[in-house]
Image 1 (cartoon, rainbow, N blue to C red):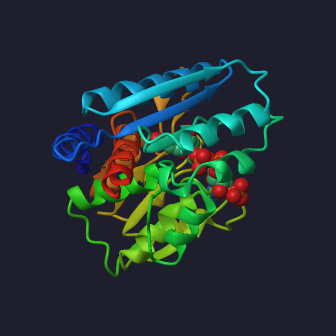
Image 2 (image 1 turned 60 degrees about the horizontal axis):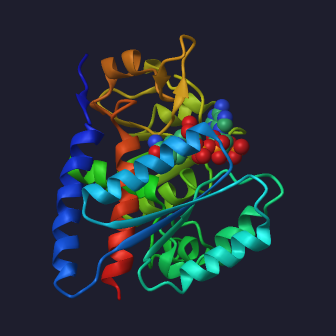
Length: 281
Ligand code: NDP
């Protein structure tokens, strides 16, 4: 293996120390950052994500509230809860865990969260602010990737970044953040012709597709930086990313692993967003 490992766990730990210090500083102004997490239904993966988010709040000295509702909660009831949290001065960040039950309109729910408390960064106002170069609250996963690149001293200005996957929560905001940092960005989706033609030209490849090990060593230019956002299970049921770590690590200059890469950064940037929302008061 030739690649340097981009250790998301270590970068997350360092970033959380910084958050903790800023939380303490806010306490001197009488402000205690608070996050409210709403979970509907009994999706086991969502339960794990939510409990990790709440636990992490405690680790940095933040206040958190977990509201759990049965799967038959109506959209109107959910909107009423969001309205109450929008008006709760002890809450600075509101997160509604996705996916929602099918009968609830996800867009309506995300737009109901006050943009100032939208710590997932999914509200149209926050997405538009990022798009127009005036970022407010940023989507946590791409924000975390930016921190990883920064901590690893990967040059972005003038670099060619190829993002594989163009979702609203990862690929598109990732493209905007990299563009703003001065990178030249190629954004690929499922219709992209000859994907490896693009990835082979990249100084930085960000994989955010949701397909186990689809990015292989032959698709990567020697020395490139590869960030793996994907969370999948391989044929043995083992956690893996979108990147075939073994073959890519032979050619890449730097690579983030799964687990221990982007995952810990996503939660950390949720805390950062909650802190930033509280600091703006
Ligand atoms: P989505 O399913 O919403 O989007 C997947 C994207 O990949 C789409 O834009 C799709 O294209 C594109 N795509 C699908 N197949 C191909 C292909 N063969 N070649 C190129 N592009 C393709 O996924 P998410 O963005 O929500 O998540 C992506 C992955 O990241 C998942 O594994 C998810 O679990 C993980 N994830 C990890 C997080 C973390 O904290 N580490 C946080 C969020 C997500 P099209 O637009 O044409 O459909």
